[in-house]
Image (cartoon, rainbow, N blue to C red):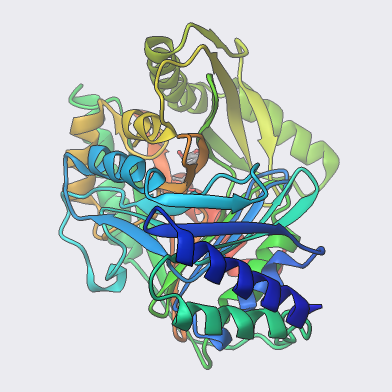
Length: 458
Ligand SMILES: C=C(O[C@H]1C=CC=C(C(=O)O)[C@@H]1O)C(=O)O
C-alpha cells in the first residue's frame, strides 16, 4: 500500500509543482485508519525535527503534524496577535490546494503567556507567537482520515524523501516502550516561597488593588533515560479522556499536556468558550465525590473565583456577537483527578473574521491571569518565581478561512531529553487559604505525573 501511495503522492506533487501558480502546493488524499499517536511517533526516525499533536475534547477531531512547510513566528510584545493574523492571511493566499477540497490548509501553534517577561532558557524556541503549517498532516475528522502534504513548489526533494520514509514506516508501527524511566531527581519551586507569594497576593487583594490573581508553580523532574513524548501522549490519551491533548515539539523540546479548558472555538459565525475556574479534588467514593461537588457549587470563594471568568467572557462575547447564551449557574466538570466549576458559552453572529482575533481579546482570561487583567499581570511578574513560557497560554489551530479551536495550555509540562518541567496554578481571591491552594496545584499536576509514571492514576 505504502509504495503505491508514495508514488501517487510523489507523482502528483511533481506535476503540481511544475505547473503551480503559487509558492506552495498542498495535496490531500484519504488514508486508511491509522493510530494518530503511532503516526506522531514516526516523526524523528523519518528526519522531521518538528512534531505537533492536537485532539479535541471528544477525540473526534485529531491533527498530527510532522515537519514544517511554513512557519510564522514573532517575538513582538503588544502586536504579536495582529502580526500572526496578518501573516496567516498572507499564507492563505500563497498556497495552492489540491485533492480533497474539504481540508483547508491548517496552521498549528501557540503563544507565550506573557511576552513582556524575559524568556528563560528552557523555553528557547517557544516564541511570543508561532504557527506552523506541517509538511505532513494527518487529520481525523467526521470519521475520515486524510493525509495532507504541503511543500514549497520549488525544492521539494528533501521533504519527499522524508515523506517516502514515513509512508514506508507507517506499515510497520514502532513499538511503544513498556518501561517507564525512573525519577532520579525531583525539585520543586520552594514551597515556603510560593506560600509567601500567595500571602502577598491575598494582602494585595484585601487592599482593593486586585480582585483575583492566578499564581503558578513548577516541579522539575529528571529521569534515568530520555522521555518519549509519544509514550506520554499515549498515556494521556488513555487517562484523560475528556481533555484536549496537545504536543508541540521542536529541536528536541516538547511542550505537552491534557487540558480541560477551551479558550475559544470559531466555526463560521458561531463561537464557543468554556469558563473554568473553581476546583476541588475527586472523592474516594461516589458519596464523597458528590458531597465534594455539592460543596464546590455552593462555596462562595470558588463561586467568586468562577464569576470573574464568567463576567469577562460574557462581556467579551457580547461585544463581538449578536447573541450570547450561557447557563445561569455553573455546572460541574468532573475529570479523573479534579472537578471544576464550568460554564459553557455560545456566541452567535460573531463579527470577528478570525479565531486569532478572539484569542487576542480573550488571553489571559481571569482563569489564568486575574482581574483587573493588567494589575494581575504585574502581580504575576513580581510574585511568581518562574517563566511560564507557553504554559497557561493559548494553544491550537487556525485554518485558511480563519476558523479554528484553541485551548488553554494547562495540565502540561515541557520535556527535554531526560527532563520534565511541570506547571500548575490556582486562582487566588480574598478568602483563599494558601495551604489549600498549594494542595490544589498538586492535584493539577497529577495528570502529567501519572502519564510520566511518577504516580498511579487513581
Ligand atoms: C491555572 C490552572 O487552572 C485554572 C483552570 C481551572 C481551574 C482553576 C482554579 O480553580 O484555580 C484555574 O483557574 C492550572 O491547572 O494550572
